[in-house]
Image 1 (tube, rainbow, N blue to C red):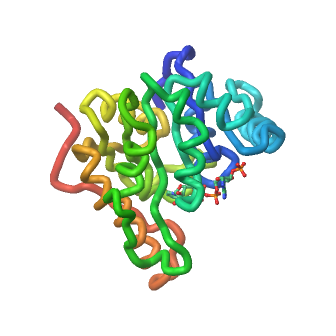
Image 2: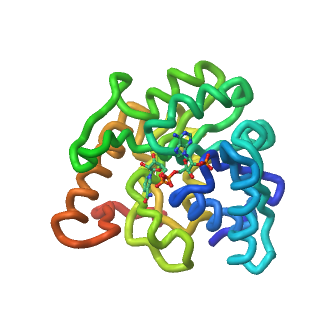
Length: 226
Ligand SMILES: NC(=O)c1ccc[n+]([C@@H]2O[C@H](COP(=O)([O-])OP(=O)(O)OC[C@H]3O[C@@H](n4cnc5c(N)ncnc54)[C@H](OP(=O)(O)O)[C@@H]3O)[C@@H](O)[C@H]2O)c1
């Protein structure tokens, strides 16, 4: 994994959960300063110290409220269930101006999580863009990455398709994909996130039918070597 500049700070809202904790682990390991955000600062502090323990104390991780994490970071990642997506974004949107928001949310509507059910905005990421408004770049990424192996150093057999509101935003997010030890692809404008978010229901369906826990996707026929 590539070492990142230590000054760059990433907030992971809902970083106490399965996906956020795994991503936080990988970014902290790569040298980023990571702020675990939560509705409960206490819970965030506990999770931050659990990750520090896994990393044997060598990394920079702090637990705090979602709002303070978003305030202090340059890059804000949201990893909460879709049912909490709007509320969480509303609670931090005033401190997001000029920052990059990376949305990991899949708009699953339980109990039918194997069925694609997109929101009126088109996708969760497009809905996020509507909520946070002008002055915030929004990227959708990691929706197809199961949390299963994120808290380990194992290779994850799934690529990351990155869509977003600008090429620069996607390039910045692709740096974080790389830092997490994953393979990322620029998958185009934020409107394309509908396909990638929807794909997660397809993967959950495959997991259910074939008894797996982390079905993934790989791009073939293209190479990143120049
Ligand atoms: N799990 C995966 O393998 C996976 C893979 C790809 C994408 N995703 C997507 O990533 C997102 C997070 O998934 P997850 O499995 O990590 O979820 P999770 O563990 O169920 O929840 C993540 C965090 O969200 C916060 N949260 C939960 N309910 C909330 C509520 N009602 N209001 C506000 N905050 C709430 C909690 O943090 P606090 O209680 O500390 O505030 C919780 O720790 C989802 O949108 C999911 O679809 C997950």
